[in-house]
Amino acid sequence: MYSPTGAQELCRKIGRDIYRGEADASTLASVRSLLLILTRNTELRSRLFRHPLGFIDFPASQIFELPWKARLHIWRDAEKGAAHSNIHCHNSDVASFVAAGSLKDIQYEVIESSPTHAHYNVEYSAIASKRVRTERRYSLRPRSERIYASGAVYIVPAFTFHQTIISPVMWPVTFMISYNEAASPAVALGPLTGPSVIDYPHVSDLSELETKELLEQSVELLDQARQIGSTN
Image 1 (cartoon, rainbow, N blue to C red):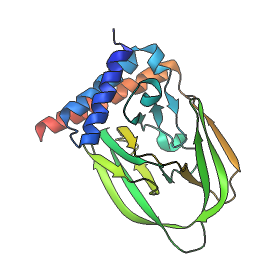
Image 2 (tube, rainbow, N blue to C red):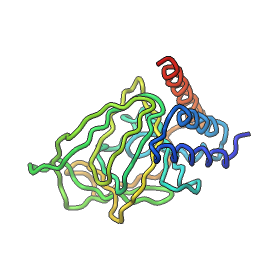
Image 3 (cartoon, helix red, strand yellow):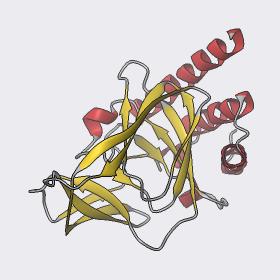
């Protein structure tokens, strides 16, 4: 029987590998083991929820005592699940390990031009998140675009606007940690005429069966990534 304690130790190892710049094949194997625990542990599996950015989120550091904030993200159907624009910035430095699939990270800079996006402060609790629109407005342009595949770690510095673009065929599984958190809130961008407050309860739109199938598919993706890695 897989235990929550085993999951905690796996999360510690994965986070430590990412933080130290030592993510490798053993890190990928640890993510696979974590997915198997979630597949077989009903209590932990019940903590999965649909994040406003569209992915399915396992909030590891809300469940376990860890040195960093840490989350497992499963990006299948993320574009369908995203409620609004997924351009946002974190109030901490973020490092993400791509365990399977691939993604494009686009980082933006703010420019002096007619505004195209509204500024929303992001507020978090253990059971929900909230976006609160402010009077600030932005216009952006891409500063960098990079594609990351299985085995890569990419870093987004604090308060850097960025966006994740995924392939619906090779959707990624990622594990992220955040550190050096600032007192200012994270920011999400939305339409200029969007609602003043948007609430996002931490709930899943997947049934129990669909959740297990998603986790099993994620394990299969990691197995494919491991096979490709072993032949290169």
